[in-house]
Image (tube, rainbow, N blue to C red):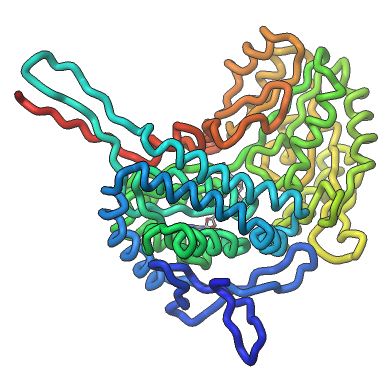
Length: 487
Ligand code: NAD
């Protein structure tokens, strides 16, 4: 395994950067600790990168670019397909590492590994899709467009679904002929390091095409965005960091894609099939312990079914297992800081005039260890309360009543975010009317989290701009050149 150093016959579980096709020790000689959320204990260390490491990685990416860019696309696709297969072959190991970094169940980590493989597979099949077009200027000219790569691009990633998001960025960036310097979250870096190793050592990706520099945002992330050779940045994370990156990108005049947070409405009409909508609303806020940018954390419920809906939700939640073993639905919060943030929101509930149901308290798991939170449904919420406006990033659901379609739209759109929205109704016309009027990059109807690697994803308003996933990501990672010849 790439990062493991051995001393006196014992594995130290110390991980280095992956630069130019080989593990690279940090220039500073320093390492950072990662913690296992299931126990709160230190589990491994990663290289603490700095500007020197960033320079080395960007130089490698820049050097590797012309050869990678000029390859026949189908050859790039063949390598991406191999990466997809090898990720699946290595899934047991990747799941083990992901579990130690995120604390999720094996099934949840496995789903993330599979999604990463799917991204490489999907973009492997699309390498020939980014064709330009021929523009008719009459008989005296031949005019056409080319979709060209940027060169060395930076991909900066968060901690909540590490491999999924790594695949989402790296897959299309490589497919379109860019080379990559990835900076995973300092809390969950190792699976991305492993994918880079697998890609180069087992799949024939040329050294330098995919590099990974680990460390802190302020030390590695900023140095990457500021680096004069980086021609494009793809960022997934918080609004605050997105703003900081956007400011640097504005000064440098480089394109940046921002995938930021959300406070997404999940709207349940009285005519919805509640046998579907109740478990759907649970999944919307419990998936990944609520640590999802698109979490359905505001549940808007039509007043005539409000009490019945809340009662059914409470009943269903009583059976939900918290933990990391088989059968658990809600795993731990990935970092201590985030665990404390969720706690602080929960301590505010009563003071804001809201009522917490089910859980209502935070627990440290049956084993009294790890950063576990029992799911909480909060009623008596109005949309002006802090818990309805701010992204909590934990298993906390605000239930907000509404009377009619117009009020549902008004409350749903009354947020600075615009990532996703859910609508539950058996009225087809209403479903499409709502979809058209909701201010969100994606709308799910009668199934929350519907979609896949094929469907474009991104934000309205402060949830960001640019689109990842699907065919749209191909335009995100390319720039258009128009060539016109006087015949
Ligand atoms: P974060 O902004 O704290 O960190 C994200 C990444 O940016 C990390 O790698 C971090 O080291 C780096 N970083 C931090 N400061 C930086 C700086 N000044 N310059 C450059 N890089 C810097 O976010 P997080 O806490 O890791 O992730 C949670 C957030 O991500 C939530 O707001 C969530 O909604 C959002 N998110 C969005 C999506 C999406 O697709 N829209 C997906 C997942 C998570």
